[in-house]
Image (cartoon, rainbow, N blue to C red; front, top):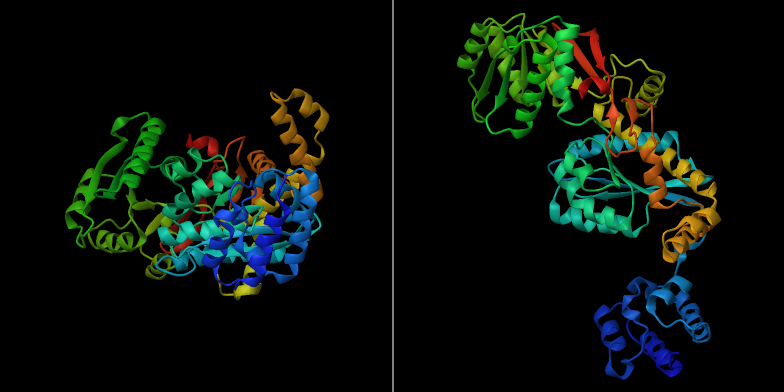
Length: 483
């Protein structure tokens, strides 16, 4: 039991202290005259004491605690400071993106999709959805601070970030706090392998190679190919390996891959590689390079005689400047892997999304695949919140407690159920499990399933431009065909 004089003395000194000075606050509550007592007020958020109206309530709570037998800070906090246990009229969804800095363009594309989806659906479980946005600036040190600030605001789900480094920087904090998160365009397998709470909304990077090979062979009836990559690009190496293996399996011939060529990162002249491709007899080329390099390569390839060759590329080719060149030059046949293309996607969900997008951003505006995927990520998050809560309310708590391996586990079930019912919000674990159960979700960016995992299994759309015109004879490759 506490010494009431000590507790009241602490509050008397705090009330007389300039509460804007944190160091004075810590000095007061750590003075030797208070040593030996169990309660540690320095663990309580400093902001509590900035709210003058709460100070009197806190004093009364401390006095009550003398009679309740609280002997640890944890019990004290759980008994009296669990503000999140009160029914709230909002549910928060965190947004973790680079909205300034070098990657702001890409972060804002994802934010556009999230905000549009929020306008379309701003309520779940009878509560308003509040977006809480954190700008990680695309910088590691900033990202670590921002993700902790977001988590402190108790979001039900976090969306983002663009940039695999930023996503991985947030991973441990998200895992430790048990908050489900959905990465929108990040595809690094380490995101999902090391963290059961982190989901990806797009297809795995290496699956592009399989999908493009399917398009080349099944869609275009081409049996001889070549590849080009930039030296030192490990991701391109993995994608090309998948592409080559798939072509050899489809054609039943190892000679279907006529050549693999490498260009230097600093190169601007590709005459030698183009001549080698021409001499190889390849009718299609997997040009696994960024859109800026691809544009320069295609211009030189056309001048070098590769006028009817099909060039296929990664999803980064869904780039406004690159596609403007393809459409205006009307010279090249190209195809690339994509989650979404406004010109070829005619699903009901896509039409609704496109209508809302143009109403918000203008009739001439075209959504990027990043915006479409972000829209889907938000909608799946909202559905998982609803499903997670309904699943919890359907629990047979007594049966769960009886089947629990330990007494503590049984108590945890009871507490989780009680907390969810009182707050009207499911636990992070329940939302995570609801996301894992997603199967056949008809999104704007394709049909998405998690099949008990946190890695998206979804169809890959091959967007095909023939001499500058989008060709509806592209191919949608089912996930089962990229394994």
